[in-house]
Image (tube, rainbow, N blue to C red; front, side, top):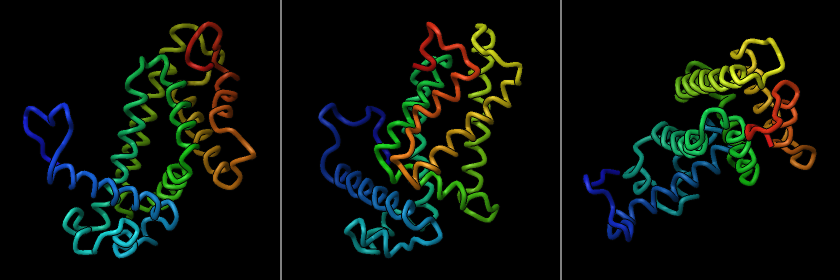
Length: 210
């Protein structure tokens, strides 16, 4: 949604802009729920419109296609997560990511969305394939840098390359989230990530892992 150079007033958006923003939020919330339940391929624009409480014509006014909806949902979701991670120094990124995982576990649809769509998008023909591929590469690169920093500070107790540690860390996160979907009472994702890191990161006196 375009904004003036001065941005919204301190009192927030008003009039048609506020209404448009509220409708789009409702649409994206409905999409998140449906994509988490049915996957991208199993969700229809008609279902999204019904869940959001608007007509299909109204939905098309805001989002011209299901692919446009998918793009908006993914970018909103990962922008929220990235904001948490990028707000802290890289040496604290591991604990910041654990906080994101903990917050995700309070919103089951988020974990279901990530797990289902990332599996669906492994097909090169999926419209989100490039998005997930780029996200994984970017996240791997960032984590590799975080492990490099920890090694430089003498806090890593293994000789495994930082890139390999990043891959393992990502695999643990995704694996725990998948298990959590089947039985949330059986495990705590955040604690599981911390336990894994504690096996090869010296956390004494540092904030990376509580």
